[in-house]
Image 1: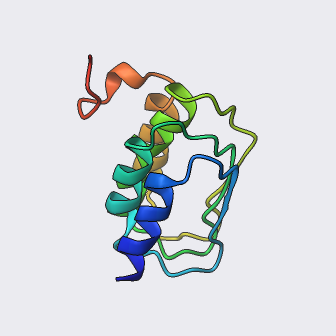
Image 2: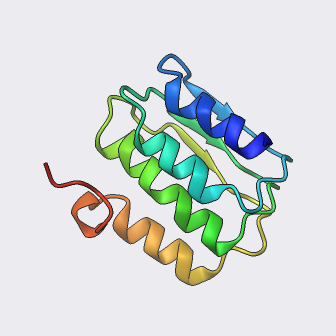
Length: 113
């Protein structure tokens, strides 16, 4: 229930500029939050803190569509991104994130229209 409610906040809130969820257990919520962010009409979030959130590789990869929407398809400019102390995020996921986030065409899930 919490993850669904949180995702709705990110889907419908077009004035939020900072997302600080540090220390919140978000394990299993990455896909839902990422999908909500990717469907936000006008995201303005430029500062993100997901430190110590118990994110897994699946959660981290699930967040990627949202970050692509925020910073490659929205009006926000990334200022701060904190994912420290999420020990279950692998080096391979980080590599994918840094390689693909700047290249939105690399994501098959984005609508090309």
